[in-house]
Image (cartoon, rainbow, N blue to C red):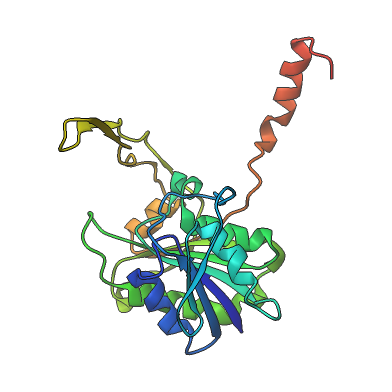
Length: 254
């Protein structure tokens, strides 16, 4: 199996390196990741500056761009197409609304856009404690990998996987989940730099709001690996009829 591996935490992040170490025991892996932390980059592309590919060791590269850039450049390194794209292991959760901002999920999604089944993998801390068990998340990927070809529709496969930060033998199992929702994020933090100039920091994300049974938040909180099938179609399909009726009532030509 040929795998393109990327992330958003950067080429030197512990998560991607632990996952690469695990994957190379069962697959041919090319790693292409950002040269710095690009958390929150979402699906952004670098269009106004040239991109540079830097080799660090055999089949390990960094790019001076976003996770999405990395997938595009990484695919160019293959003489033949890879079998799939894997993004992670992210240092922290990518649950609920996080997927809209996540560079980890974006790299997987770009792999899917370009025609490959994809996994996005994240390790979720408990109570903001330092992350420890990257090995657990790597084992989750190795456990699922032999079964990818049996997925009902690999042509549309993007699985967002969140793993509790516990030892492997403490996982309670695997759950198929839907995305939950967070409360609105905290306000912008307004402060000054050492020279007295005003600066701002984006506020931290809100706590889980929709976190009931069946959500990714609930599964991870209960000690299960959360697996959420996602797609890039943002259409609110059930609102199409109501929107058409509203537009008709506006007497707007259609």
